[in-house]
Image (cartoon, rainbow, N blue to C red; front, side):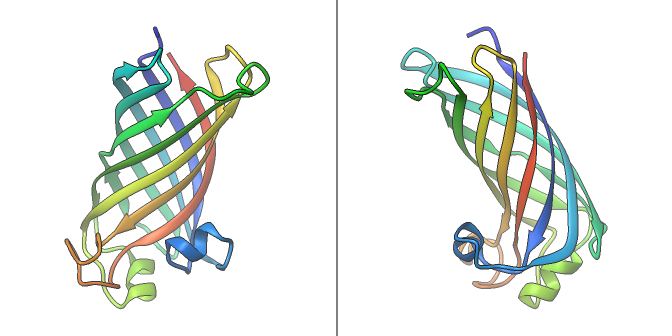
Length: 170
């Protein structure tokens, strides 16, 4: 293993749609942009390092029509073995954890009628990079959620952001 830490820096733009429509490309962008710095620690690995679990601390700053800071602490599962890894090193990850915004995000209020500072955060990530390199491109969906009514009334709060960045493992 040896590369138990990773730093990811990414930027993205919020969409006006729910997760399903965002994933299938049925959305428009809104004037809200985030830049995120994240530090992840891989705390366990299985199946010859193909499956790993990590915790990631994130600090994000919003720009455009939304100006809050955002702090997220997801625990993630990552799969890192694909048949084409000799050509393009690939990983898929899903993370879930708490999210805190320094103020109620303006665009989340516009899109959903209300939101809260504390929501649930999750991300989906695809990384692609040169084989045997510590560097990779990161493609992410950055999502704040009311968790189906668990922390915010159903259909209220939350946002979806499509983001790209770079990851360095060490």
